[in-house]
Length: 331
Ligand code: ASP
Ligand code: CP
Image (cartoon, rainbow, N blue to C red; front, side, top):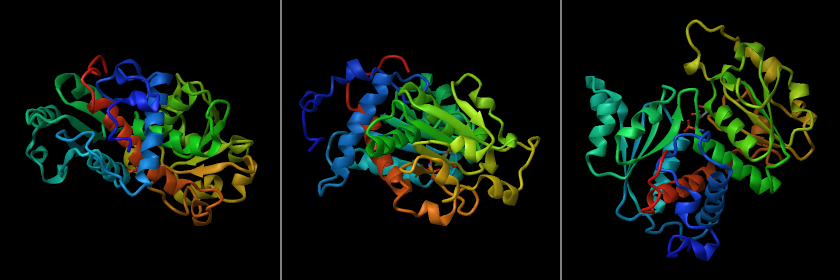
């Protein structure tokens, strides 16, 4: 079993201190290509372990990890909790709705309060861009970003990369089309950064109303035309319209108009390569950004596999951050 081995050397993974010298996982932006590859390599091993009879081990025995989610989540929160438990850690979920945050406690006071309990990691989702970056310098615990506003969702991009690798065997040279509400999507941003670091060509396909303010500094192609945006793509990723992140002053889009022009279906996917895979980070709004038929097409859709890889990637991240003594430098 992977967890039971005393050293990474056995698996030909270089020692953690040289490959993953981060204290926190705040974003993809500050990870090197080698960091990303180290996470994906370990995650691939955990993915195999998760399909075996013995899924649990004591790699993080004695460690305590707190899930602090200020925004709704199904798969990220559940998979972080499962990942921690499979590594033998104790986990606590803070129900923000019934916590002292409702009595006016600040974000920083909340995090410092939890940190005072001698815990080891805080997995945090917040609606404000940069919230995990803000708290990280103040705590002893490792901070793991589970999605901050419109900024980043690093473990989503990592699990997406692992899923792509399982199907395409490489990322370098692939064309990945990310379609839909990219403007409000931290998934799109983390993926664009990660995929570019690993050598993929990224296309953002979105209606003009979802213009791309977050992507100004990234090397991506943009199109408002599904046919052109999907042409020859190896991977097509659909995104939900993230209405909860659309500001009051922003132009609204009619759901039916959007679906008519941008819903991913078997006809539109025909512009991509014949073996193109279809991805979605979830939750999907079926019938809006993707049809039932395509989302459930076992020949095309890898949506369930993305969820499965989420547990493995989060195990790898928690392992790399929390299991060693030497990864305490920088962010
Ligand atoms: N679940 C993803 C996120 O939290 C995508 C979405 O909500 O549409 O960013
Ligand atoms: N993909 C994703 O982050 O899903 P949840 O919002 O359900 O966690």
